[in-house]
Image 1 (cartoon, rainbow, N blue to C red):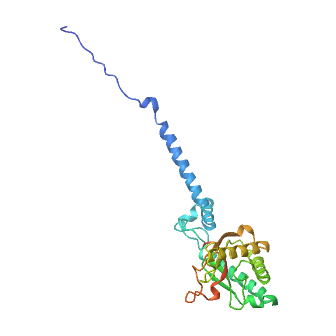
Image 2 (image 1 turned 90 degrees about the horizontal axis):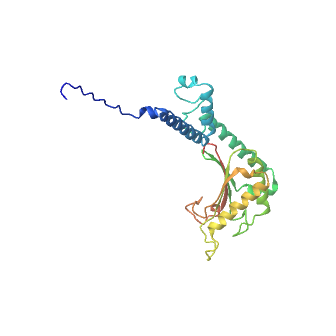
Image 3 (image 1 turned 180 degrees about the vertical axis):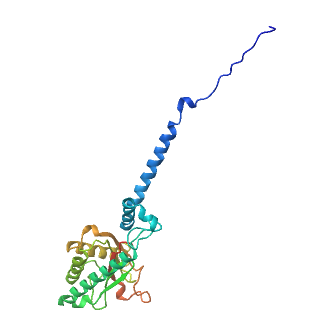
Length: 249
């Protein structure tokens, strides 16, 4: 063995050559696709103002560099924010106030609605236009203890529906009662009565000009939201409310 040369050959181990980096590219494509998907889903649920701002960015990305990330629309907000701009909110408020004025003028011009017309109250807030049909001790919109509607009430709701049907705002109809117990039976209570009256009002308005797609809710509140809280038996607590919702509400 003396004088022999021993040569040891080491095999190089490794698997990178078999796979390379192709999987990284595929994974990156997958993550990008998921981000795009969630962005689209987020955008679908945003307000018109946000959608307009996003569309404006893609039309002119440079506008955002000079506006500090603000929307490109006049009075625009951060894209992350939702809801109309102050200018849009003011314009909508004015539109709702005009609608209330048109309804009131039309009611006042009809002699047959002279009595019930005095029991209609209009309130414009950030929530929208609320129209309350308030009962009194001397005049009622419905037959006592039922959802049966008086003829004058049908006419009155027709005037309201004709005006509101020209708007693109969504609407919620609410029914309310006073705290007087409807009956000793638990089969039909103020909950059912308030909901039935609200539904009767909805059906009447949809027959007379309100678009069916406008109504997004019909609610019966019984006596849980009293208008005259200090007097639960006050007849004004018995009412039907039509809420014309602001776009940003």
